[in-house]
Image (cartoon, rainbow, N blue to C red):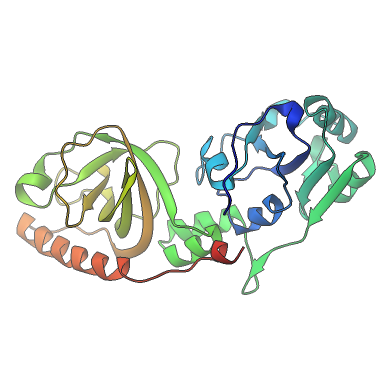
Amino acid sequence: MLRRSTILKKESVDTLAIGSFDGIHVGHRQLINHLGDNGALFVVDKDQANLTPGIKRSEYAGYPCMFFHFLKIKHLSGDEFVALLKKEFVNLKKIVVGYDFFFGQHRSCNAHDLQKLFDGEVIIVEEYCYHGISIHSSLIREYLHEGRLEEANRFLGREYAITGDVIRGQGLGKKELVPTLNLKVLEYLIPREGVYATRTRIGHNIYKSVSFVGTRHSTDGQFSVETHILDESLAAIEGSIELFFVEFIRDNQKFNSLDDLKQQIEKDIKEARKQLETCRVYLNDFL
């Protein structure tokens, strides 16, 4: 996908795609595809985005995001909402929305009303389905809660990823098990507890990894997100890293001893290597 600058002044914007855009999934991509060189996303922010929080949406969309909090616009009538758009974006000529777009106080207006109220071009994008299933952020969240990575990633058009800061762990892994990087993760939706085949981005490098998400039932009983880098010996890591979830391997379990846990980790590493050698093609590759 062609990467454009994600920085654009409002007065330069001539096309807007309007929505919440949490996840930037393949359904959203149908709207984004209608943006030109001076397009942007008008993001209605409800403080609920946890698939793609904050400015990450610009990174995945490849376009700048203009954030407008829902509480500041929900009282506007349809006419007032359109007037706000024209005031904020003085060169606005085209608006792109989905078939299920509503606006105005109490969701009183729909996409077809927008065509009547806006004096420029309005594109209404039809429902986008995969194998008869309509793609929505809520369904992707459900898949992640269930550990259904293949479905979630297909709908996202990419591997689901979370970003976290490296923090100090128990110190047990390096001594008794395998060394791991422990993460403090904020804002993001954490998928089902268990072990995953993952990729870990550290700086500009991406490494194969196996990661654990959940309560450490076998040791201190604390919740953790931690990743073990495969076949690499890295120096001390600081700052933020990114985890890409490739495949769910197994549920979280409690083990009677550290030896039992270590044996299972060795099996997890073997399975992760197998999964990471498999080529996966997601919907975005065809868009």
